[in-house]
Picture 1 (cartoon, rainbow, N blue to C red):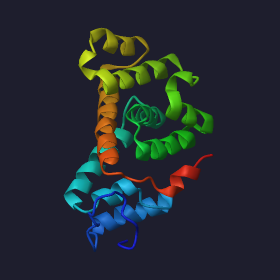
Picture 2 (cartoon, rainbow, N blue to C red):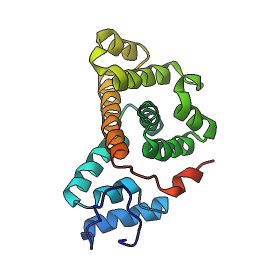
Picture 3 (cartoon, helix red, strand yellow):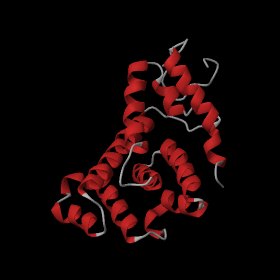
Picture 4 (cartoon, helix red, strand yellow):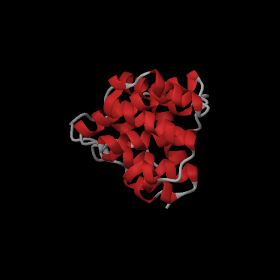
Length: 190
């Protein structure tokens, strides 16, 4: 894997050889996606950092939650749109297109989620994620109550906040390091 181009502007090559567990994880990515996402390759210069990143990502995006996988990807896209994170917009925009079966929805969320045909629940969730991204210190109980009013539990509010928070952090790292999205994302689910 060392012959791959660097996934960021930083000279931090992947550990070579990768530990067997990491290689197995990357092999699963290739099997399921056809490639290793550059965000994983970027973190693979330090296996402990990679493991920490993947543990948090997998917990937030794949573990049991009152939020669907699509809803979590929608949050990722809206946060990334506000932050203008090219990597995450491309990668998670592709996930929204794939999970929703609606390429137009993915594009709307990338450009301006407010023009998308959303349910009241989705709109409230994305409004909250957007507010967290632009003005988290201004969130008050009425903002959380609005989420409850459209059917979210307190656990769901926790999950919305954590997904939005994770992507705010990830967006900043991806942008600061000029992380490039895998070219395969651009053509997925179109």
